[in-house]
Length: 579
Image (cartoon, rainbow, N blue to C red):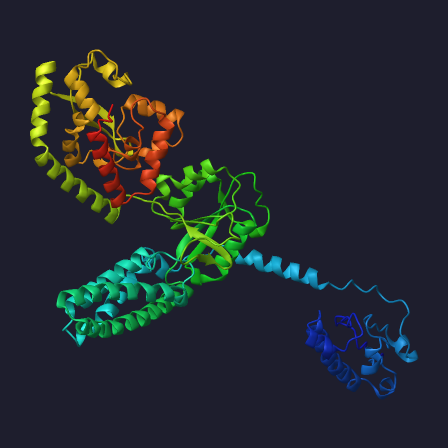
């Protein structure tokens, strides 16, 4: 009976590529040590089993000798090249064949790291399906949890001390307002209680100091104000505890994917790929990466840059098709004008827009900078007139127009009589204009001249030097009081007090083609007065400048900006700076 080959049917395991012992290489993190050490134990066991199963004559056959520890240390013996056994003939002589297979080149550390990184990245950016809970909690935002808890914490001392009720309520509301102004209720990708701590303490102290000053003056007692501050100190400590708890709760919900929002990354460079990897690996940012949108010039051949949802022009369709909540603009190679056009798209109005600054190595002026991993991100501020913002503006319009009609009613009567005496019947002039979202409406003005026909009314750009304009009509145009009947358009909802000036359909079509950004003026209602008008852009002035001023107003809207425009409008009226 021929003795069986002890190495038959088993994989030949390579020895260490250098002179270090297996234990040393395993401790130092060398390549292949776990397989090498497991091969030592497994091969010893197989040799023992094979030796027991052989006849007595075969047991005396010399077996291949495993190198000793000293031999392995000094590179001697037969290890390092892999072991061979050529059968009984070789076993009888106890020699090792000189013809050995070539040893494969050992993988370097750099090659191993590159291979592992490629394998990891290929799985890190792949999209995954949203959880059922996340689909139901899509409309939730962090401030919906933070605001109630902050107010409860600030008002908590009233549960056991009602002596300073008015002061505590006033300080709580003032502190919450300061938190909102300071961005403590804004959307953040990186959530950290310690990042918010300095701002929380500072704004709470400001609110307490302001109310304490009023309390001291009203009660003419510094002691009374001091007692109030002792009570509100408890509110301040409780709000810190509340904020820490809510931040932990938000992070817990994000990590378990109970609350997450779908995100599209615009770009395909190294920064965009790294962002995708970070979002896929770290759910605490609250975003679920679903794909890239990029220009055609950027290749997306590698796995790390997939999936590619489409080109930059397809982002409007992809936002709706994927129920996208967040759009992140990374290192996309596209002109700024094209990017601004995408940001202003109506389809992106309900999305949170974030951007990686191009000069991200330099610190920004933000009080609490945000980041994803080590990549800084800033939220694109857009003033969308919807929800509470639009309700506040509409309430202001109704209040202003209603009061103004009552106050200027004598002036309206004088203008009506003067127009009737100078131009005959027909005091008011009606003209079709384009309002919000391109909807036409009938604008009302005092008639300063009588046009030949409707076509002249719609296509004649300026009548400043028209001899048909009488002295009274010229006075009304110069002081802009011929616009006062548009207060009725404001009450009807066709217009607003401050906004881009309405234009006729003929010129809207022409200017929208000739001037980029002109059509974007119609994102908001047109106005009785506007930032462009009080900045001197009336009459024969560049349309491109008007469009820039109007879009600036839209993207930076606030009630205070409306008040500033109204004050400047009054100054223009009194100095007769109209047409």
